[in-house]
Every structure is written in C-alpha cells, then in structure tokens.
Image 1 (tube, rainbow, N blue to C red):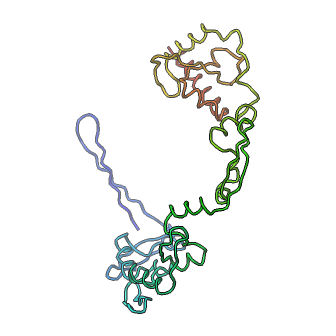
Image 2: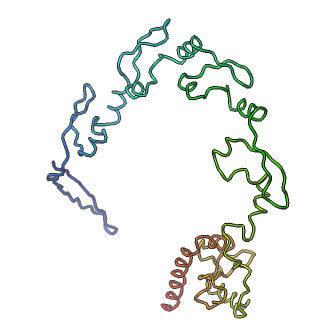
Image 3: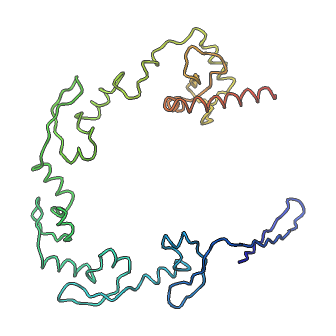
Length: 297
C-alpha cells in the first residue's frame, strides 16, 4: 500500500510555487482487505480488525449503505384483510417494527383487537400493544393527562419549610420521582428567602462581612485602576460610567498589596466568587504578566 501526498508552497515575495511529493509506505499496519457488500459495487476497502469487531467495514461509502438498506426481506402485512407484501429495512425488521405495511393497517388492526377510551375525555384511542402491556396508553393527549391528574390524582400535602410562610400546599407522587428534594417549599420566592446566610450551600462563614484594612483606601483603588488602564482584566471591557471594582486575588481582605489587587468589572467580579482556587491561580498569572511588561518598558 502506497499513499501519495502533494503539497504546494507559495512564498510571500515573488510569486513562485514549489511542489513537494511524499511517498508514505504503510508496512504491516494490520489493515484487512474487504469487498463492498452492496450488489453491483464490489469495491475494495481496507479496514482495521477493531472496526470489523464493531460491525464496520461492510460498505465502501454511505451511498452503498443507504441503497442496500432500502430493500429488506419480503414480509406479509399482519392485518388479515390486507396481506400485502412489503420490504422493510433490515434495522426495522430486527427491532420488530415491521408488522404492518402502513399506519392505516396498524390502526385498523388495533381497532379490531381492542379499543381503549381516554380516562379524561372518553375519546377512543388505539395505542400499541406493547404500550398497553407496560401500563401506558390511557390518555389521548398530555392536556388530558394533566387535567385528570389535577382532578383525580393522589395529592401529598406538605407545609412550607420557610418559617415566615408555613403555608400548606400539595404535590403529586410523580413529582417526587423526578427530584426527591422537590416539594419542600410552596414557591421559588420562599426557597430563596429560606436559603440565605448559614442555610445557603455556598456559605463560607460570613467572610463577606469582614472589614477591610485601613490600607485599602480610595487612593490605592484609583492607582490599581490606572495601572490596569481602566479596563477589566478578564473580559477586556473599558469603563463607561461606573468605576470598576478592585478584587483581592487570594480573597484575603487584610492583604492589600498592589500585587494582590486587580481591576475587574461587576460581572467578572461575581464570576470569581465561585471556584475560588481556579481564579486565584489564573489571576496570579495575569498579575505576573502585567509586572513583566512594566519591567521590559
């Protein structure tokens, strides 16, 4: 097996081209010779043994694959008055979806076997037999399902965890299957009011209420902003109206040295409150790069 590769190189100065040819020989690469399985093609293709294990290397192209899948075995329609012969795709016959030649035949056969009525509106519906066996196919639509559940479904009554509310509300058993923590609060507003301070999962012992050192004055903040050219060091946006905030890189309010301070906009300052270890490492590299540039100048 020999592969030939041609590369053309164009220089920036006077316009001339150089043509390089490379011959790459594949010795003992482990590829196996196969023929395309589609009738009338018979092209040779090379496949790795691992690909053959996965079921690959049967067709030379997607065209051949689609054309070979168009026709399958001859199957009779299972609806007795029809008995039409049709050719489903091989993947459809394996999955067991090739019982009827059309949707109409499938609906007629289900009508003949059994008719099910919607529990909410009473309309007749004809679900698949496998869905009936699983206990599904009781409603004609989602709206009917939700209406029936609202009127006839089981309700679990609970009391809101928020001490200021303590309102009674109900949930459905199906809601608990989606999330166990669901149904603790009557509304999102109550959940937000409850999860403040020590109850919040992101609580760090009240660090945000600690006072700054006397060294962290307005003068040093203005110096840091001027050093960073009044631009956010993460998103590179320039100040328009509001003054940008000065952030402590190691999150220690007592350390107010210029190497520990950096200018950030409000959005980026909020971003740095999550995943603090990552942002501390990243911003330290940024500060090093700023001082290295200043030394070069």
